[in-house]
Image (tube, rainbow, N blue to C red):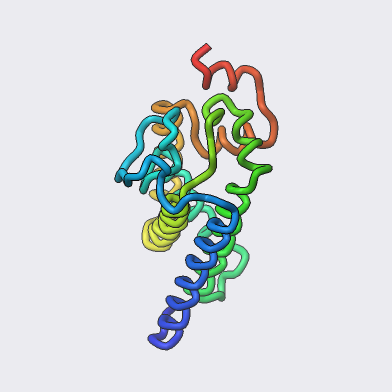
Length: 189
């Protein structure tokens, strides 16, 4: 799947993609780290101003699921494509989303949701680790049986939904259309 020369080229291309992600986020005005001035390994309070600002948080699981989905879709659409090329495509998609997610339009759209009213976008460090989390999900999907990958995706969605009243599915749904009953549930009403 990987030849040494191609592996080196793909690694360099991956690093360039991550550097481009950081540069664009910087140009969009996102801080490199949390404006609180320190870095936490894990931010657990979904209503905290530190959400999406530190290394990992509850939404990290969504990015792992992105990797599951990207691997599965690319495997179905392009069965003969090399694993490295699929990963570069998946990184491009994830980085595209990470940049879009930090535009004023998307930040404001998120602020309309019950759990993201104080959302200011991601720190650059958090966004880069979101992409790395997607890569982890991509490689897990490559290595694990499909049934286990699907099980993990469902487990992550249910567990995160239970703990914080949000997950990838609800996030996408709320972005498309906000249902009052979901808003009320997420607000604790």
